Length: 406
Length: 188
Image 1: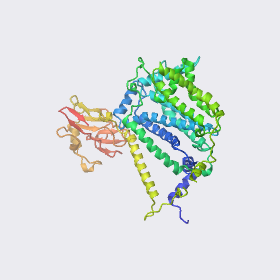
Image 2: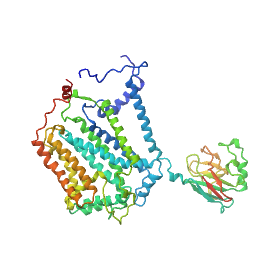
Image 3: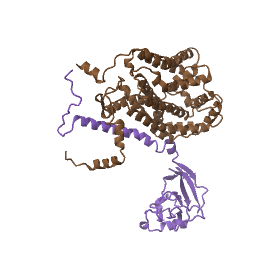
Image 4: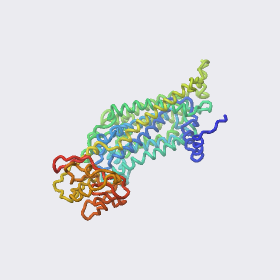
């Protein structure tokens, strides 16, 4: 090949020699990142989460151009966005429903990691970074929900900040510090807006750490066994195309909600302006907090309830050591696999309990499911991993396919 | 299953050397680019004036208390609008100018309403860089041509609000307005 390099090519190489950003991206999610060839559609949800993060930041920036973080004007400014700002309704519905769809995507992503053992050595820190992102998302979503300053915003903020009053000795001082006053008021709204704008960029930073930690061992795969170089294909174009297709399917669902049922996941009471003198009869958090809310209410003690609620998330950090099985993928673990699906159903029931008034059946069911939640992690995970006989693992990712082809 | 087609089956190029795969790639990228542009438009358009801002685009005011030689400032779309009750001498001096010598040629008659020659209504924003020229109050500087003088960069406007000296390129703009009756004006 005696072809002369084109001017564009030479300019590109000049730039790359000084700031190799294209190679950096190519190494991270491009043709230089070898990924196992057997990733199934559950592996789409990582890039979907990244897409939702960008969508939330973009729509959020434009909402912030029209939002007023003042207790007397916040509610009206949101209504102005809905009625007067060009496409304001679209941007706000994309943002509000985007939060729900971001959580749907992230929950699938987390449960995929849990099912296929993606948290096990050597991916523990990768798992931790993901959990930190999850925690930052919960804080961001909570503060974002406060901003419209409706009844649910106000009373949600009151209840959640009051959780910290359960801390012995310093609890009340901490709550006063969070509020910047003696109740949820204008200073609270101002700082929540500031932090709601900041935290997504912290999440972006954590995403970089998450991807960095991913690239040392590489992606896990549905078999859970190490992928040999022969069993890997370049991320681009194979998985960029697959992710793009998955994104298209995902967007159908996302925009079906945005255009046809934009308030389905929201509480109608948040279209009533905040009133510090009247608590709504039934306060419910957004759906993505409901299982944890049910755990909080299942325990008839203020401090222990709060500890259990936070513990339900923090326990995920030690899952790599609670799980004693040497096999990653639940596909090869006949007993654990059943317990895992029970855990998923258990979580859905917990969520339902969280949406109901805490009395009668929902309370009893909430207690049973809270028990199973912790029993699963603290007892079943270590014991089953120890006693279970896993199915034989294939010698390589390609082996079962080649055998079937013979 | 030994006759499985290899994953990278060569795709035969068409007569112009383009393969089916090239076609698919280019249409996909084109659709993606159009889709991205359509997705960005609502975000950008949200920065344009909103419905409540556009609703404020007309202002009414009365000339009943304005005396000859006086000027008032009315706010229209957040901008100052100069309303000047000109004296006969000011109108005379504005009409004696050789129009073709002006930087932004315009006849004084075209800058006022017929039979309302005394009322000069202008957007009070210097066409140079947006400052508000002085000249509405008696003690203000009026510039070398008896109209307005912009203190920012020294533009002089005459008694018809036309640029005569200094860096501004255009005359002070005449906003769209109409007389609802003898003394009531609606701008916008």
